[in-house]
Length: 176
Image (cartoon, rainbow, N blue to C red):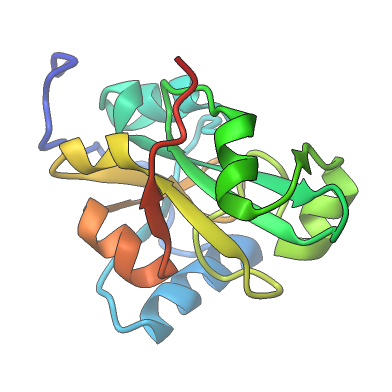
């Protein structure tokens, strides 16, 4: 087991099947289309929460790039926030950056706007373009893990790659 300060984690992937589920394959295809060599893996256990994902790959929860979807209260526009797994997001900060009050949508809205279920929303491969904000705390790590389309699929990447593939804006989203 690696200590919580470990930055370079190599999970045991010997139990993972080489064939991806359709949702995870969509994420793999989106990554490939962006020209990055990142590999989606499906784990035998749940990675729905940040704690479960960190346990599954043996990293610190701060290295999990959790995808949270919000919506504009007036415009109904989706907002994707990719936050460090240990952080709660400050909705007032998000609203100021987004330009309108925001709210948490229901599961049907998330699936309709992203094409993925809550607990598996990836940073890429969505049904439509999403305004994306990236938690600046993720930049302190050499590597991070993002959801990959299902509640048990992940992929490893660097913070620089996350910024590149999402074209997201790095901001302070943490609630203090």
